[in-house]
Image 1 (tube, rainbow, N blue to C red):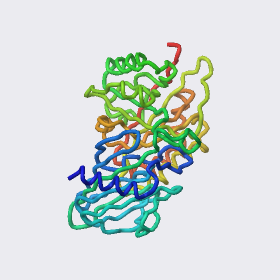
Image 2: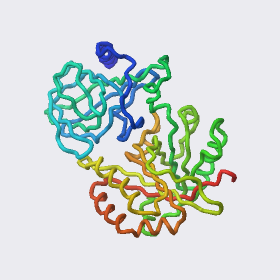
Image 3: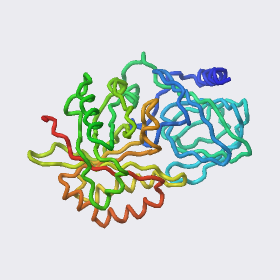
Length: 358
């Protein structure tokens, strides 16, 4: 039944007239989780196939459609769509069993090719407000491999290098991960950004959630496939970093800190506003020398290693003392008071910047 549904969706994709759909997103990278289904069934260079199951009364967190997509309904219901920016209700519609729909991305909006549904934000959440469980098979159409490498083709975020944060409860586990990363061809020593035991501020030690050692490093898709994360005491967060403030190169003798924050927001959280508020701190707190962030996008098979966390944020400080000043800054305290009520889970882990000559 799923294969027949996928075939129906692919037919709809062809009818869209652009099997090599390009995302028209100037940011190049997803700024909300790109997991548009509840279970990824398959991914290759041309498409991503998702299973989407929404029980009655369940609301899924906001996600971002980076690509054109189609879906075929296996179990119908009525759905409500919510803004990812402010969590407000946008519209509701019926999705009966057997229906197939297709959407193209234009700018930051998704457009129904039939015109039955008005354009809506590519960033949105969905809730099943009907009387029965809902299920669909969704297919995203990615840019094709054979197209010219022009400016549009370069927008394939899945070819970008990504950040991986790895947290462990024992030193031997992080040492093994470090040795593995150094052994992978193409992973230079400079790709290991941070590597140490926790140096959390005393006010945030409990937020490390029992993890004692961590590493932050850079991978491409090829090297990511060569890594292993099988240890039971390990958490893994992969994300494509959206750079807000470049920390530059550390001065000689400087021991910089990477302050890593991972958040799972509540369903009704105004995620866009909260992320913008965090970014805004970089203009208010001078000790924040670098800042990058991105939605968690663990590879197929590693989803559970992220424990449901949705976003990663990394701030660079020139010293542990600067990190302490940040924690005690009034602007930071004000933001914490704003975000904590909307946080389902929060993990904070500070590590020392890695010296690539080591």
